[in-house]
Image 1 (spheres, one colour):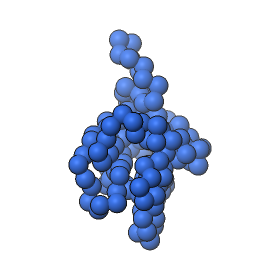
Image 2 (cartoon, one colour):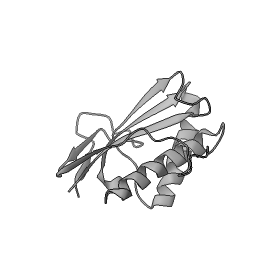
Image 3 (cartoon, helix red, strand yellow):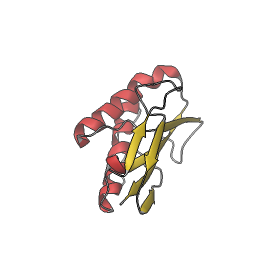
Length: 135
C-alpha cells in the first residue's frame, strides 16, 4: 500500500478523518477539484449537499481509476463547502458514506474543510480536491 493512515499519539482521534497520511510511491497525482457533475456535465443533486458530496467523491474515484489508482492511494482531501455551518455535518457524512458504499472502500483520509462563499457555478455546494500517491 502506498498510503499509510495514522492518528499519532498525542493528537485527538476524530474518527471521521485521519490526522496524517504517510505516502510512498513514484507518482504523485494532483486532481482538479471535483464537483457534482456527470461525465456529460449534467448537474447532480441540486440543493442536496449529500448527493453532491457523493457525486464529487465518485468523480475523484473515476479520475484515479483512469491512471491506475484508487481511493486507497489518496493521501489528502480538501473539501470546499459553500456557506458551511456545523448543521451540515450530517449531510456531508451521508454523502461520503454513500460514496464509500458504492466504491467499497474506506474514504477516511486526512481532510481539510474550507468554508467558501461560492464555487464556480451557482448550483455547486461542494468541491472535493485530492492528492494521491501511486507506485
